[in-house]
Image 1 (cartoon, rainbow, N blue to C red):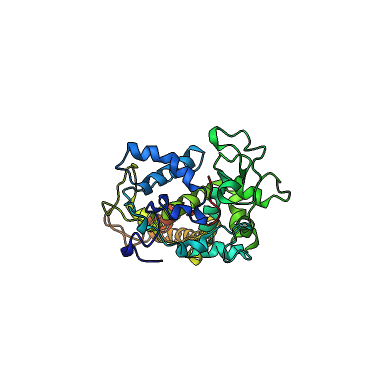
Image 2: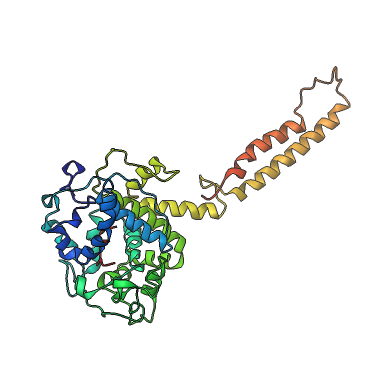
Length: 360
């Protein structure tokens, strides 16, 4: 990957995919139609750059289909000339890993996924989350060349000129976690498409656990997808003004800066371990809260014994005034105990080509 100083030759979110020759690369087959549908909007709002427009369309599609709300910043600069397109030899390894258009590692599609996403800095959980975008849309043989039926019971009566194609899920216009559930199905639906890059998620021992987690927890999938989508939207992007344009109320620039940097897998594991410990009642330093109870009981017993000794000695003591007295009072001990226990109450457990075939 080239540094952003080499923009737009570094590739990324710069809108160059709308121009020849890039739009005609094998990995971009089928995008020309989608771009043509957005062209009228760009003519109406010329101040909105193409990369922003493409992302707005994706953001709106995800949210309107029931997916997570993704908060992005705007103001991306757009590539202007065909010479700004990334050379085909830069993206040829990103060709879809399927029999009709084999990638350079088609024999091992899980390596293809690792290469595509890994070169952008994504870790396993993010790779699987972004592949979950296949919950929407269909593949068309006449567009991308992928081997799939021309239509199915789920796509035959689609609206307008979007009829036909083969989807990954039955409800291909709903953004949910059904893509992962279909992958794990013991009886695959013959009318749904399943490419080699899809099955690779099950064959790779580092990816399959996330398929299973997302299949069982849609909220987790939405959270991971939203974070990864935000980072994807920033790849190779140059902003004017440099800080971008923020339209969403409550947008947190610090959160964005943190989201840009991928978490290391070992950090993710450590966070999960901490969550499990806190859920079991352990403090942030590994101290078992329940183990403190016997100590508190001992302190109370000592306080009672001390109080009893004071009572016995009181008959022999001469008290000169009400404010005098050298011995500790029971109230003072109670205050100390409260201070030691204060901490317990505050503890709380704590897009473009997505690496496979792109169509709709």
